[in-house]
Image (tube, rainbow, N blue to C red):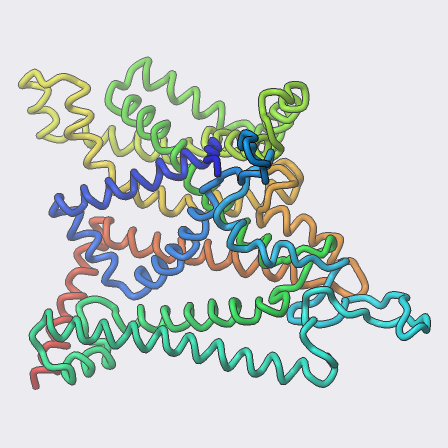
Amino acid sequence: MQAVFLITDLFVFAILLFVIWYIWHVRSDRNLRANWRLAMKRPVAMVSSMVLSFFLVVALTDSIHYREALPASPGQAIQYSSEAISVLDKVLQPLATARERSYSEPLAAVAFRKETFEREGVSVRDYPRLRFGGKHLADPNKELAGDLSSKTWSAFGLGFVITGVTLLVGLVCASFTTGQSFSVVLTRFKLGQTEWPWRSMTITLAVMAFSLSWVIVLSQGYHVFGTDRTGNSVLVFALKSVRTALVIGGLTTLVVLPLALLLGVTAGYLRGWVDEAIQYIYTLLASIPDVLLIAASVLLLQVFIDKNQGIFETSLERADARLFFLCLILGITSFTGLCRLVRGETLKLRELEYIQSARAFGVSTPRVLWRHIVPNLMHLVLINTVMQFSSFVLAEAVLSYVGVGVDPKTASFGVMINTARSELAATPLVWWSLTTAFGFMFLIVLSANMLADAVRDAFDPRTRLRSASSSNAHSKASTQEVTA
């Protein structure tokens, strides 16, 4: 096995290391720790974090690429495959290799359209059996419903065991750590009278466990979300698209932050000709239609890649370079809003007394910006960053839909939606590709938006005090009820 490091892989793990460092930094900062505790005590924030954590794990497993060793004779040097695969590809290999001839509906055992074929030596026109879906059934017309029912109950039983064991361990641990009896802990849990939203988290865990168990169990014998025109599993393509969505959201945010923060703080603090020059730059960029600028940039990159095939060894590297370049262009065209916000807040902060005192004592400008201005802007930057994440995910879908997004060979929700245009006009209607893309993208965007709302309420000084007072009142009332 030979490790392969794509450009976006390096940035994905760089973002992961930054998140780990930020968590460590929050633990040592009392104010940040209090704000994040206030945000995460909201059930909606914890539920959204659990859903996003699942998609993050999928994206990370799809970001570990390697080349497999080819079979070699004794004494021959080890050679590796020309194409790189990821850990997720290896996990999904049974589904990826279980291809059909063309479309098949979710949980079907026969093809979607009638074909002419021979049955017992007689030419007939009927729905042929699938190669993988329901191949273990002797008579799909009679056995399909019963087999799906039995596998569904087995999946629900597995999910119930996972949820029950996790809940029991959690309640026992809570009883030991708090010094309360198991019955008191169980009563507080059932009434939702705990400091952290454990009841909401348990319900979310149960739904996730049931859903994943159902998909895993049924995937052993069926295409759970059907197949596309080429006979490939829609579930595999959707799971591969998760990484593209999170890379677009995370990497583009990583481009926006330094540009907006550096230019906005510099313009607001120095003012004068520096402020005018920076305003001219981002006003000029904001005046150009984003779609036209992105389309022109992506097409220029595609021409460069076509003329310089030797730079990239594989098609995966070429597609990854286009994805990385798309993130850069999206970041450059999207930083103007945050830059304006940071500049306006900096203009207000530079006139406050403690900033004037620091300047009077001869503190250098870089130190004033780093130690006094930037920390007081981070709540705005954090709120705006979390809220922009979902907009970048949607932007990729729109750009891929119009043909100027990621490489057509790259798995993404935009490519799935673009492919579904012709499928929606087919007779009969092919609905499952669009529905799957919509469902996955809806979960990611909705979870990010709900988490952004909770973070905004916790970090915005205008709503933080109100949230904290209501939380304290709820905790006191819960304590009094249990005590009584």
